[in-house]
Length: 260
Image (cartoon, rainbow, N blue to C red; front, side, top):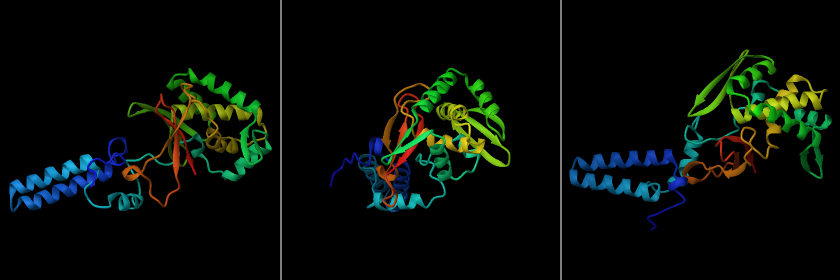
């Protein structure tokens, strides 16, 4: 049996699986300690050592743990799903939005490839550049002025990162990172100029899919990187599709996720 398992330790270590295994080791050590304290201490030390070096001590944890985690209503240990979007404040059919973007000439579909119209891409880049130097408070005011149906935009600090909390009429709050806010507000403004036929709801809904065309971070201009999303015990639930996240290596912010 291999003692060191790098696929389940280090950066691949799964926090919930580690916690569960350590808890079980502790219970086993306490049970044994009732009969013999030295043996109980030995069981606890050996079990903790195996969890540290091997990643887990309960057999087949990587097989059953992802399925158990998938049954939870939320997973506080892993980042999954798309980052918050300005488009979350509305509800418009995604296929209808894509069709509207193609019809407006913003998106081109040729030989099963999807790309942005160069003129729109240039306009979008210019709008992002104009917003990039704005302070968080100024950007919040810009969001409040451009988004219909939004009552308030508050600037929050979450684990040292800026989040814009959008208060919508009749809808739960939406939290958006600074890079996403810059990219999507710039997209709304570029669409106003280049796709005048789109209604406000369609412009708002288009912000999320357009974000998938980004190659550089809207906030710091660093080239974005694609990284594998790891789930429980260094892997994902085998029933899930493979997934990657596109992140800014300098900001540490996710811009979007990619599903295969």
